[in-house]
Length: 67
Image (cartoon, rainbow, N blue to C red; front, side, top):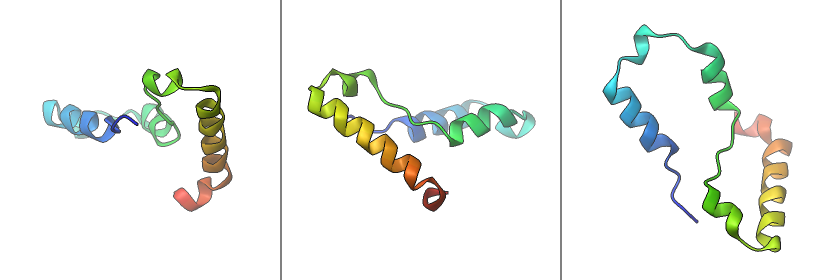
């Protein structure tokens, strides 16, 4: 599966600007509750798609433990 690029992108963003001078609470809240999947992940088999759905459901069921 492809490497999770989210943290690297966030690091590059923070290096390019001063996030301390901006307040984006709604965008930050959305980032905390979003699962990103690269499109390549969705090019698999039907079983792969079922595994993805199962994984998302598992995250939903255990969300309080992940916070």
